[in-house]
Image (cartoon, rainbow, N blue to C red; front, side):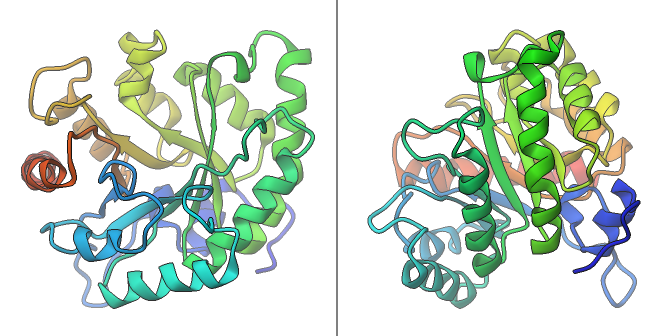
Length: 290
């Protein structure tokens, strides 16, 4: 898809139909699209098998499954495996909103091979119909945003892959241990609508930014948030935890976020996951649609 060289972030998101990045979409009849809720295959304890779609389809309110690129033998680098996953997703009427776990062992966002790994993930995403590629980098892999020598190489790498991502119709979602303000700075330095933040309020607390978890939603705004992870450790999201999820959902609604909410919850078993997710769905829908 060719784009004008000065295409804005908002125009890119609207032109590519990336609702998960904050575009406001309506169905043909003029009613809003249904709430988009997905779950990670790893959270279901079913990463690496296309049977995950069959099980996910039994959970009312789940519309998609986030997959991990390098899990399973063969992994999603294998073309036949990719086609099988896509066939099973279509068979059970589910989407694949995002592709995570893109790094090989020993490869990080700072590695010389990072560009090649992101490009390879784009090809997989195209086959799967995924619209977000999750690029994770935590702790020592994350840059010091006060030091240009630290963040400069990462900005440069992301700028190299941004246009190929746009051409493939995907957004590179950054999930990391940076504060919301530092994520905003990083995304703005890259300066391309195909690079945004995969926002995880729970991670904000884990990495020392808990007080900014909710305010960070408005700071980033819908044009910088491409997808959202939802979790509360091993507890259901309605239970008391480090994140005020009702407040978070209000903030997402207030900024006009209309994308995917992807559960990254922890469970003891697949059956526990199914039961907990049913309850999480009821709670999430009440918060978003009230």
